[in-house]
Image (cartoon, rainbow, N blue to C red; front, side):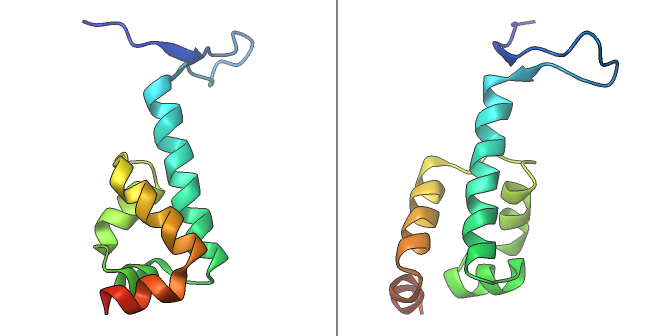
Length: 92
């Protein structure tokens, strides 16, 4: 099995702590950006998904870091964060 690069090693003094890979750290940072953008707009997951044409299940998976949001989705979320009304009109 291929060894994954450990970005943040587990704390040996904490039996419940675990190693964090670079991939997992990236996925969680992407999840945080999406969640903060949505909540910053004051929208529920359903409202955000509907307004910006993102499947709600996909949005949930991204926000809960069950799946890694692809680069294009991160770019889209950044544009939504800066110009939400313009994006909503463009996809209506």
